[in-house]
View 1 (cartoon, rainbow, N blue to C red):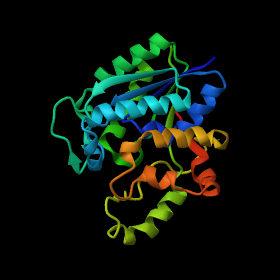
View 2: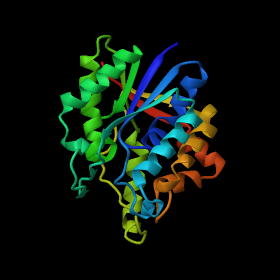
View 3: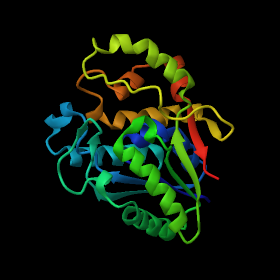
View 4: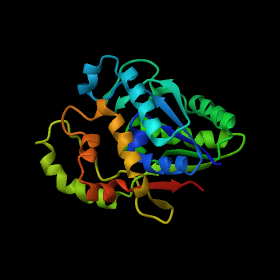
Length: 248
């Protein structure tokens, strides 16, 4: 049995980036531990109708973990930092925390679990979210601090077709409320270090994990809502592959 510790910035990141692969590994008998640095309490404004958004998103993460077969969910307790252009103002933000401080807590968990494998994010934080960039740094440091150094895989996306799609979509973005499109310098270029994993056999589990994050699917054009609305053939094509960078 392999023990996998999968670090994420916010609830729903695990469903978007790693759900199919984690469901595969769990189904194969591996132990999957989901770790969330924040509870995503600075998430979509439309979700404010749920009251305590952080509590709501913790519940959604538990439902997602169940769909993926995760054995444990751990919360590091930091505050959601918000987007770079709209940061949160409170204390305890993940983006303000010392990398060593958070990495030491994560390394202690890696030691407790005797983890074989750790997941983080690529060096762009995907699309540049401050908390995603911090997760990249934390995972790299925690790998070094762990007593038994785990293999590190950084969740990402092959940006080749994504960049082409963004260039087509940008002229239309102003007409779609709630849609913010990143620049071209996102995720990862196609290189030999980029691992492509076919997860079509766990598509149902991935869609269930996405659907668990209902608070993040409302209020305008939202990624989760769009992905769940995909016809099955297109969903198999777009959601049926996940990407990781293997860190030397």
